[in-house]
Image 1 (tube, rainbow, N blue to C red):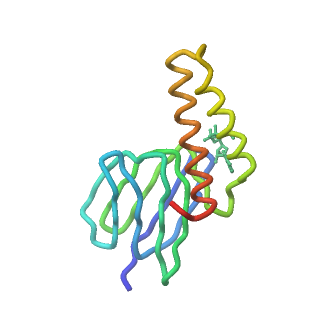
Image 2: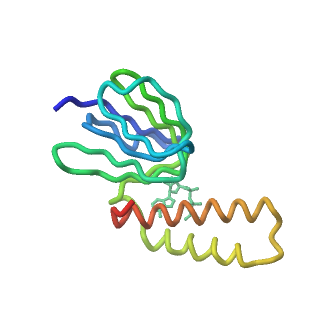
Length: 135
Ligand code: ATP
């Protein structure tokens, strides 16, 4: 089976670097499926999962948005944060989710803090979903 190199990089360093058969994720413009030979592309990502298929197995990685670049032999994702499913601290994500939900209920928060809480909630929900390998 043909493969394509995938690198997921954050400011803290590389999170994933391996050859896979297929990459699935969600750009702001919609779902993306990338297999070897995909046309070159640059796309901003949602707060979402990246699914990496190889030898009949799928690895899940949570990314907090970022930029995906497809070149003929390489997919690169630059993200502010990224965690493999096994790296995710579920208790921490639950606490982050509860904090964000509390913030969203607070009628005193200004627009910027409300938006920040919405994004924190999305990151927490995404991490929880990836930790259960559901999304
Ligand atoms: P928190 O409020 O728990 O810090 P956050 O969404 O604000 O959550 P980020 O700013 O996205 O956190 O990430 C900061 C760093 O912490 C990154 O390196 C990220 O990979 C890591 N991180 C955040 N939440 C978790 C988690 N639940 N499990 C493992 N690593 C996490």
